[in-house]
Image (cartoon, rainbow, N blue to C red; front, side):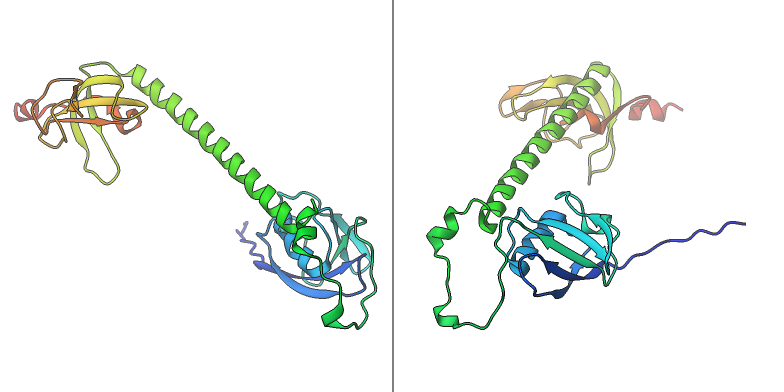
Length: 241
């Protein structure tokens, strides 16, 4: 007899951070749903490395794996509490941390910082722009795919078909299809319906343009995906049984 088990892992992992830049180590907790790119942003502040850094995971002295896929989640790697996350960045000169005069120590000016192409701010701005462009492309693709589906549904309907309209947050309404196609009031494909009851919003016209004829409040337009064509008797027909 088999038993079902659910494996639940902790949402955070505690790692020891080391680097080839300085001898200083630190122990930090990170959420496992953090992307490697976001993890690198945090490690910039901890180690002084740039976004060119390479990450490698160790268990004591045992090598576990490299973590070089920026879009992957930290939790997708075999990370465990107590593991060592080593940061390597050959573009940064290693330094020895010694006591110094805080007031007289070197500080990079805003102009110098802005000139560095690999600084944190430049990386963040670039990635935010890339993410925004990617999201816009994905949204456009999703919109185009949805509209193609709506068009296919429209082509499967016929004027005069009995139908039921089911729109979110509204009760189902039955009626007869009176219009199919594009409109001037909204982009995309629409189904014009003459409802059996005065549950609509118009008389078959919108913004001065008429698409079909019906009594006021008996007309409405819905997206094809909200329409089901089938046997939906008119109220008078039901009374005859």
